[in-house]
Length: 296
Image (cartoon, rainbow, N blue to C red):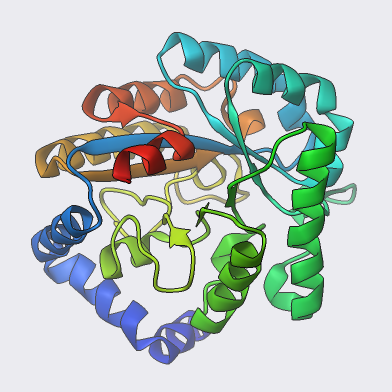
């Protein structure tokens, strides 16, 4: 608790927006709507992406992909290069079905902890020298070109929630700019309410991920509700929050529902597909590339 309070006090913007999300949520959403309109949004869009960070994700990715395509949703895939190489067959099939892939770095950033019998996280960008971060981004780019034959236009940092300081984002965006990238989607929901659903304050276009309805600054992801040990939220909370988000943003009418999940967490979870159906009902499904084309 003390560490969390200290982090918030060290980030006055984060503290201010946390308080506003509790006492003036209506004002927070009005600000979001204004920023979205200034960024060129004329309607509400929905992008679904998958972080495929384990071998189990590759095993279920096609089944999940096919089901979503039947729902009118084409996901975007973020796969670390080492795992992309191992799962090349299934990811190539997904690519040939029209999916978009973004750079998610090269090195694996999860490992199976045999003592706990579960996956654990590793290789956090904030714990690496910046040159190691640069190398991982560049290697991820080269690997996508060599393995799938595509030139990626976008990027998501591994464990991006830990790499959020302005100087970190400027460095990351600087590398992406050198590579000729069009966008990044590596920031937490706070940035959507501070700068908007699409902004260029750090270099290339940044598209923050979306949050919960009851807690707008907290990411709504599959780990939080389906997989986290001793989790506070359950699968039913994912469906509930997803429906509440749909209702709230349908009323706003503009902006971006930018949600991500891990396929292995949700491949057999009706709560996830119920939330996706609601998002696709109120917003136009798109890939990041399609969104950028419409905004331009």
